[in-house]
Image 1 (cartoon, rainbow, N blue to C red):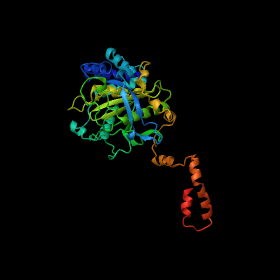
Image 2 (image 1 turned 30 degrees about the horizontal axis):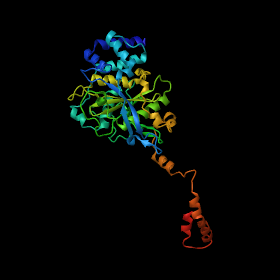
Image 3 (image 1 turned 90 degrees about the vertical axis):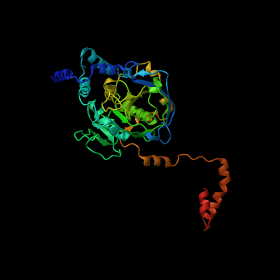
Image 4 (image 1 turned 120 degrees about the vertical axis):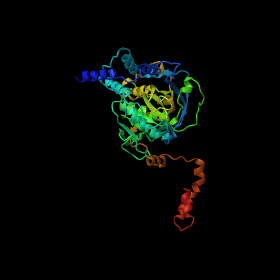
Length: 400
């Protein structure tokens, strides 16, 4: 009965369609084809030359370092979300709906969003651009990401500097914040660790990139030029989050785990497969229809819908794509067990604990024969002065 009610509700949504079907089809195709008429969403596999993911002291995300370079090939975004692309194609071509109830539910979320208000409630784009990166990340989570998944709940880093409030930062009185503030620390103090800006439905990490000097400020249409400037923090956060999700959900069919990065008026997706050691970064996806609009672009909506619901729609890496290793396993082989078994979410990053580990006395102190011979007479001195009030007694004691 519930299933038929859902189908009737979806049919009603189809009848009330408020979006341009042609534009939606075009947006879907940009995920699947390298189209000349509009920038496609590409994924570039990366390999690491060096990183600090296995240092002796552990490293916070803000100090993470990864020297990476892309492989010669790149993939289409849709190749990693074949199940989701099939749902979209069946709907467009045949008005066919997913039979799986969970898939149907999140598909209706997409249709609801497409038929509803797709804009951020601000007077103009300047208001959005004048906000901090963190504020923009939270607004996008509240207005877009939270509306596309099974739940509108998300967690915001409790260390966020702005005064915590119930209403959204957009300023609209009726727009409530569906996220809560909490502990978003993740990792292990012995390896990469730190805070995520936002966690959506406990399944998706959303972060703001650190400011960096541009590495590729050129114009052009090559896959490399479209790719995200390789922000070390985002790579570290994505890899750690992927290992944690693999530990938490070993039953999943694949472990290709995404992380969304939001900067200014664009978003990017970084993905890491912690089983096959493959790291992918996406090209830039414009958040809005144009520079003067705060209406989310269809391309951004589709990318976010697939990414937010990756546990349903991510098809993982085919055998061919598994060959482009990131070499992360090689760089962290001495600490790979920590990444695979000892990562935590919440209460991570106790600096005092780190300092205590560094101050512990080594279990074995080595002294050369030459040093022993040169200082053997000092023991006799210590024996003599211990029976007297010699003013130099403390110096003899220090010599040992």
